Image (cartoon, rainbow, N blue to C red):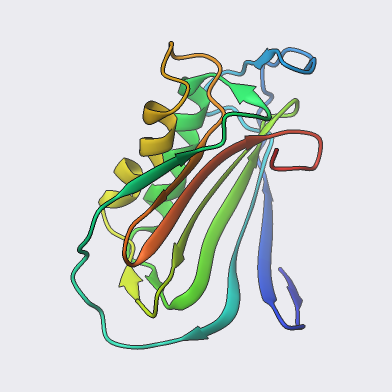
Length: 172
């Protein structure tokens, strides 16, 4: 486990998976492909941005989806596989205001970054909505088919949930 202290404290854990991804070489603008659930490694952590704790409140408000519309394109299946795996690991995690719980799954030719962040003075416990909220930008953006997904994020009154395929050391 690597811990660094600065204005932001990040805890990162890299877990190498003993599986190989079936991938295609990435060419700018082309869709990256991989076998769902066959990532090479997972990097995950909790980032604190001047977090404050407080009472848990019921989730309310409108859910707004913002689509990236640029960057790495990936198939829906490996993205959903990442969402399902990560949410299964973090359900029950308490997230304080300003805190982000995240993971980056490496498929070799592309990565998938997922995160949940508490905003607007809110605190929450990650529940079964994790999968649904992270799928909103996957299914609500790049809607011409199941390929070419570029991700985005969902924002509501208390949280922001991000799903972002990326490449080459970047989340773009």
